[in-house]
Image 1: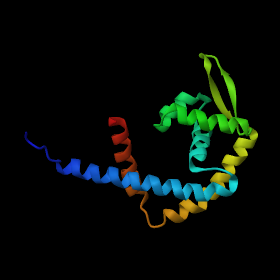
Image 2: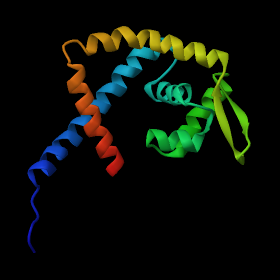
Image 3: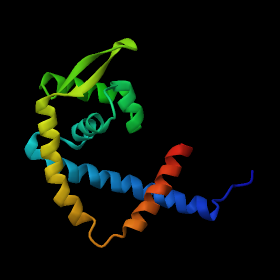
Length: 148
């Protein structure tokens, strides 16, 4: 049986994937530290961000698809946030059971407080990085996401 070898691009994408995995772990830890004083975790903050940045209210399943994760994990977090008065469910005119999720005033304030912490952090993190290089990086990541 012939053992297939990576192409040059295949090897480079494999290295990129490993770096993205490591970066994700570090981002999760850094995010946890950054928003801990607000009673948030990176996971909860990501869900708040998905809801806050959505063009219109969406269902949990839609947010999970957009984030590229399992619906059950997002549902668990949304349920916790709802119990704390951070999000609320709204009727969905297109589906009886898949309610739409929106931020409450408390949730909006919490999200804005997280962003207020994130702005100086990310400005410091991005020092010396070229906007053009970052745009290229985003293009490559977007292409890989579409292919997946």
